[in-house]
Length: 254
Image (cartoon, rainbow, N blue to C red; front, side, top):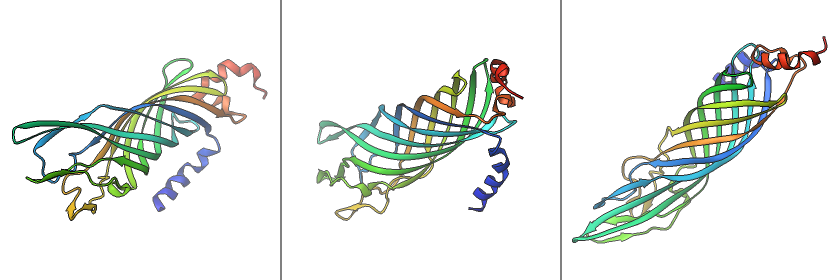
């Protein structure tokens, strides 16, 4: 809490001179759940299949005065799923089945941005930071193998995975100014879950559902959208907006 307060005090003077933007975004993403399937002991192999889902939400951006940097806060609704194929052999017979785990998250990324112009109207941004995720809903099957006895499908439970997780994200974004007060952008974002999201206390018929290993969310997403820019009266002459000054200098009243 003290660290957050200290950061706010450092940047507070810059907020009054910053350029504030609010935008909407949405696009598809490839999602993976890096872990072994939760079998107690299994006589086969798993194959994670590419899973295409989507995310959408809002972004709030501060670009600091006199610096090619800023902060961005997002609120995203995200679908993260994992399709898998499981193959196994019992008494010489070969079997296979497909499954899917379905996660729905509210995600709140907070990233630090470093930017620079690569054209008169185009800005390239690198961003990195943490993301806080809250699990709204989980659905999917767990196939449990009790050696030499049976395969079993326990009831689906929302308690199989933890409600909260912390992710690390980094990516690149292009912003293009189509009007004085409006930008469009496209971002490529890589996410890695820092903590194990399995609920290791979960059990079924006396067996631990997650006896070892751990599950980490990974996704590669594309975000496209637009932002409305709230200008100060002196915003057109900010060092990071020289092109805007050149384009609109005749309209500035001193």
